[in-house]
Amino acid sequence: MESVADILEGAAALERALDLLAQGEVVAIPTETVYGLAGDATNGEAVARIFEAKGRPRFNPLIAHVASLEMAESFAIFDPLSRRLAEKFWPGPLTLVLRHREGSAIHPLVRAGLDTIAVRMPRGFGAGLIGKFGRPLAAPSANSSGRISPTSAAAVAVDLGGRIKLVVDGGATPVGLESTIVKVEDGRLHLLRPGGITGPELVGVAGTRLHRGVEAGIQAPGMMASHYAPGAAVRLGVGEVRPGEALLAFGPERAKGAEHAVAILNLSPRGDLREAASNLFAHLQALDRSGAAVIAVEPISAEGLGEAINDRLARAAAPRDNAAAAS
Ligand code: AMP
Ligand code: MG
Image (tube, rainbow, N blue to C red):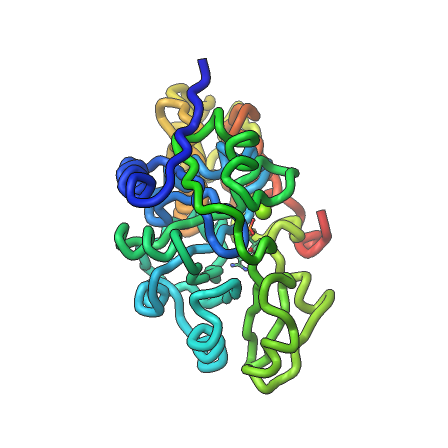
């Protein structure tokens, strides 16, 4: 039997949400934009659960939601223009893509392996929740992949109610549109996604022009065939490891020749896809640093989260010439 999510509001919702988040569970929460599916951004399995619950076929990078500028600064580096925009529009529907502060507590799965991180300070229930939780929450919209973003608790419950434990009901979301996403590069302001804050509002505060279109669009992850491209070549679905290769393993049984691998990391010795998802980016990067020319990857089930894991590995294995090709 599938469980059905509780729908709670107010203090009872806050208490239960804090409890579930501390256990690494995901909860649907209202923000001023749309309902979000939130999990502890520092906990890889919680982040993997977000993708699992949404049935997302890909690991797109997620927005890290914060309760203060200080919290954002613990994992992101602000250039002067981004800081001005944050001071003016936060809390509110503006997401900034910033340079990630190396060694931060944010789990790599949130960034999908990028060296940037998207950050936003929401208004309303989410802000209070994050403040009390004390850690950033990763949260995409609370809909299953391919459906539209929900603007009511009822819409979330109909779609995801069988897969999550709690929907916090905060009524209809006031903005009803996703956040605007911008990125500052070399002092230029790029619009990556239009949303709740308009172009003229941004320009009014930034005092510079807003760059749109292909120029900005190419930076939207998920559009690139390989946005995480290791230095090593990647060989997928291997049954036999060749001498000199590094091995990205999965499950309890090893490919033939594993003993010759220059390095071995196992995504999940017990074959758990959630654990594998949470280890994917860190393990790929570590094997890349081993200096092997090739990373051999054992076969990984394509069920559930396995689809997104295999998608990311296929991108890592894509010929580098096509690295920028749309997918
Ligand atoms: P959602 O949370 O579903 O509204 O989607 C989040 C959006 O933020 C997606 O369009 C992502 O591509 C975008 N995004 C998240 N992180 C980054 C990043 N580091 N660089 C550029 N875009 C990002
Ligand atoms: Mg969405």
